[in-house]
Image (tube, rainbow, N blue to C red):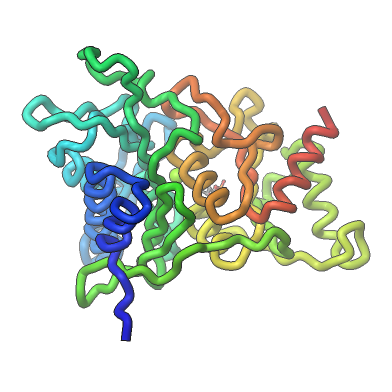
Length: 340
Ligand code: AHM
Ligand code: MG
């Protein structure tokens, strides 16, 4: 019987057979995966580990931080700062970037993460996750010695070199792309290792399932209303089929369902805060998820433009997100472009 390969073996093959990733990036991904294992342990302890509830502080976006948001952020920093592969990190939970301290060697990669996405689900025992994105510090000039700064991070998503998330649900699953499709690794708790459980993940181009927070309907823009109205009209409407709706309020869990069986996820711009382009963050939520979805044959746009082509102007930039089954995303995008 052929044993299923581990994450380590998968990564070694991406490096050796496919020549896709250098050893430093392979090791960096392993460290992120190790940190996710530690976060999974805290998540699982729940009330027994005194990790539930709010920490009594706010992050840079003015959101109340949960204890687990802070724990997960610290775990990711502690695990990654000394490895020698990173120049700096950025997180939803930190206003500025975290430059690798002088006592450790600096590498060429930049790591961005949402340490615990879907925080409102922590205390109610519903799936949450860690989302991450890896960029390479562009260094056209080899003699460059200036310190790493925020502008090094401001690269469009198509320049990511690795991206993924870890979902803490009934199973703990790490989902990864290094540009060669999407692979899923389930945490084997007895062995303490990540085991490849699905390769070449594909999102069907059509779907009968949409995900959006319907309570915001009155604030939506016309193209989003049109799309959802048509879904709700079911068999009798212009789409000629009945649609199902899901909303977990945890992007990781919603995207995981879409990678598993298709669907469309939308967190569009709306009129509640018209000056903001959306709720979700471009660099550590939309970009990694957008790349995963594209690598699985789906599409990801902000309604008008491919998410991975949006050039960020600041670290915590927000973006309108429409992603999932290709034909549905193209339909919503076309509705936006027609309305312009
Ligand atoms: P968070 O990063 O503060 O947890 O917020 C992001 C989450 C997403 O996971 C989810 O899709 C969305 O916020 C849910 O928002 P809402 O509660 O408005 O439906
Ligand atoms: Mg988040």
